[in-house]
Image 1 (tube, helix red, strand yellow):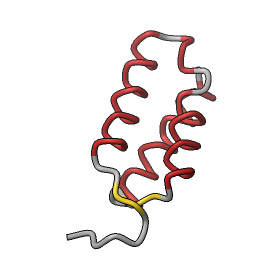
Image 2 (image 1 turned 60 degrees about the vertical axis):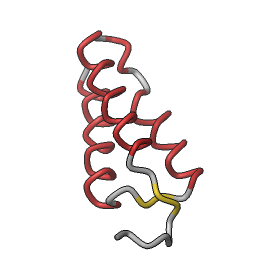
Image 3 (image 1 turned 90 degrees about the vertical axis):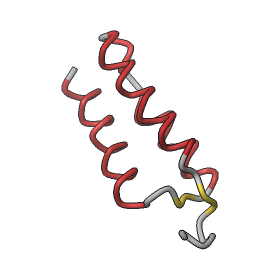
Image 4 (image 1 turned 180 degrees about the vertical axis):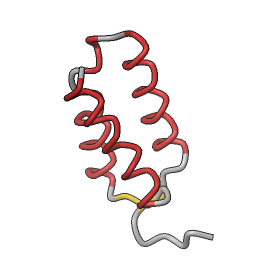
Length: 67
């Protein structure tokens, strides 16, 4: 559970730090990495999936104008 929470916390950090700007492969890596092990608890998996969906919704290719 702790390892899964740590990975989800990394998703939170990336989401806040990058403000939606990622390289496509970075977005894909974080989505897979951040959800790894989250299936241990349905609520944890749901929260992780919500974060990934938010990342995808706000996705901008790195270098695009943030405005």
